[in-house]
Length: 243
Image: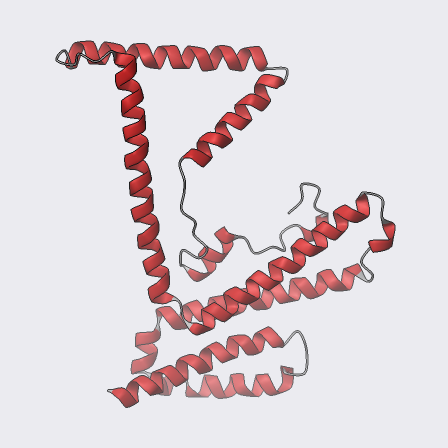
């Protein structure tokens, strides 16, 4: 999203953090490359150096580096007298070694989270995640359009913007409801499987709701939530037939 995003778009996007909270799964998790956070730190440091606090930043950074090196050198001299390599070379080696080990641990952790996602990724959740991507893409498109308009192109302004934003708000509400429903059904699948008779009436009620809502755009994602319930019901019956 652009830095100058308009107020009515704030809070509409479904972020990765929110998506992971709603699904309780590591959705869209990316492998952390340790060099990237370092690049970000260097970038911010350079920006500060170019600013009014440049001298202070340089002084603090240099002082921290020298102090850290002196402490490391003293520790080596006191507790590792057998080391013949100069302490500054040893420090560089340890930094590279530590970085490599950290990256390997991050990779193993990432692969483990991917496995968790793979084992819990239902067809219904895949559909909903695809809908979330489409929904976020619409918001991104509106934001880019706003930036083009603010650059001096009033002819590209979105007509009936309030209605568009209201429709997006309703869509987000339905998406969140559907994601919550999917999570509840997924995490309680074993209980539902053992007590299918308890949920028959609820599904009948939801089906009736679908008939009244199916003609409206607002009801489209409500129907998606219903489809999740029906998919689970079908899966439960299929599993029962196999047992």
